[in-house]
Length: 166
Image (cartoon, rainbow, N blue to C red; front, side, top):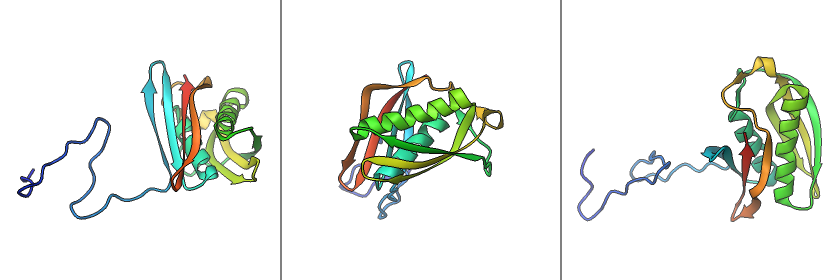
């Protein structure tokens, strides 16, 4: 690695932080995304998006990617959903529990999630395929804890966090 210009120090990335920026260019902004990490005997998922539906959609992606890989191009049937909750964290909880129900009770894995905000509700559908078409890459979630559950608008984005029991 070349030496930094005189008078400038190189900063080391914090644990878990990637270094992909090029000198003189700002890091690309992702308006939606997700990540997950192990947490004791559980897994923490975090997601963000430009609006409430995109944040919730990313949370579903994070949940599913933690236990299943579905072949690209897989298409299945649609399961309609309409969720109401007294607040945003409870809405996140309801959605993630719905996904776990679809996997556990119906034996299907979501490959896509489409949501629309209806004020006091979120409506849309989960596109699901039979679990046999997916490859398990981790333990199937058993539930979502209320401990550590969060969802709120922060600056120009929505952010959420949940602890998933595996």
